[in-house]
Image: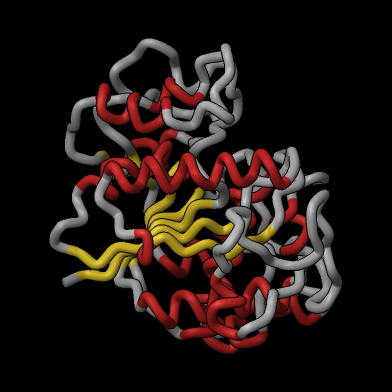
Length: 297
């Protein structure tokens, strides 16, 4: 059986982007990893949001033991506010506090996040501890295939999670299939298009990416609509969330070497692994702090 991991930056992203994957996991070992608590508006709203996610996943027959909560913070969408984006560019042991905490926690009383379960202590909100959390959970799941928010997504957390994943895989020396899903395509008021059966090209995608996208098998959009509708704490009158209820989903996939070169942080191990393929990138990394390199934006 194949091991599949769905990496969700916030509770609800797994449903918005990967319902087709979650529906068809009978012949796979599947884990959903909820990276942040979605606590941008406080701990109470975070608990509600996490319970909504658990309810939706239970309807898709995902065992509770296969829902892993990392318990990191959520501080906003734009790059200056985004928790994971700022964490990505921080020094290894600098603490990036959220409005709720400076360390990981599970928003539902009586439950423990991943790091506490395994290390018997909370992870600090540092780059080092975030990578350690991601490394240990992927070592546990041993994925053959990972679905993750896209590097082209306009939400800072979504974009940075993809970069963190590449850095983690480089450290683990793992070769896996990575498929990217997009939630914030560049204009949430217009994309996804409301009242349409299929996704149109998001503003953040160029024609080549869109042409090479992977399209899921068709399924009943009403089923996805019902799942999304569980997230009452997130639904607004704009119709944005419910516009993801379409009959297919799409994923972007690139060669691993190309993905590495698009990542703005280049670790020393990655430099060693890709030296022969990217000498100019290595030169830039040696002349700076290896930050903001190869960024698309």
